[in-house]
Length: 332
Image (cartoon, rainbow, N blue to C red; front, side, top):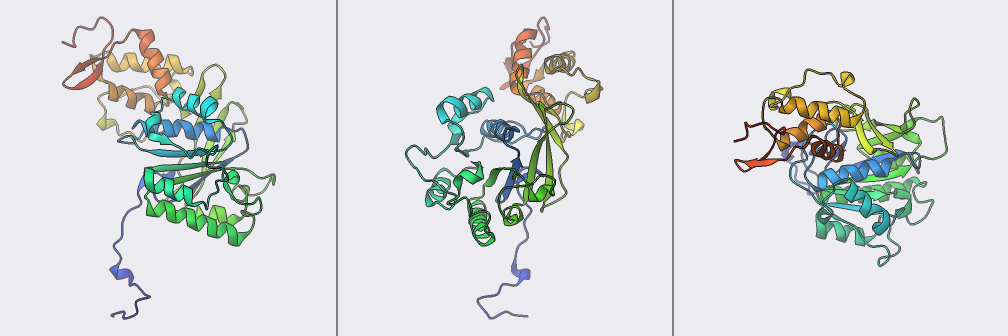
């Protein structure tokens, strides 16, 4: 049946396309993701490590490659760019040439519905935009509480994500309504949660308060992802400590017979054991070592420290970098 009206479109004329993911199934491209939790639970720290990996083309916490390095806008009002954010990004191993922000010392009064945010996204064309925290970028404290205003604001943000093909992550603090359903504990109207395609929640582990659990409590695009864990300790800093492996063993040159729970709890000891096992039969490409480290939730900082401790000096062969144990003559 033909449709003569210019107002209507037949779904038969629409070409179906799959959802594009930045980090499947947690953060989708062209959609809004809400990352929420209590103040001080490590939301921003977690996101900065994710940003660092994306900026250099690294890996997701569950071992999936980001591919090529991507551009990011990280807009944060709670920490200083010079004395806090930049040092943390460097510590996380970020390529800061791919990370930008709107300087609020020069551009004051920035809000989520500000044209300057749209202009920045249009000019920089980032793959990821992070607003931290959302309540610092609303025109009035009550704007997110009023359903009509919240719906309009979230619709605008969603259109920016869709138009410029970027993932938008809004970081928000929990409200004080303890005991309520997780989806309703975020700041503002339920319309904020309704507009998000994914909602991630960070909470402290009851057994160890330096360990955080990341739960996906909403996913409108597919099934919820598995819980993830990270730790923030004074002695070792930030590290992912568990999570599902998405790496196909058939795609690796190394396959460990050790189960995660059987490995040493100390990250340095775990990394040393895995690296030595990977290299026991000769040189291995450096990217393969990184895949192994990602599978067992070991970050670049720990990996590089263990590399130095073991005396490993990478060498280049066939235009690729390889690792080899000291004394191994098979690299020639």
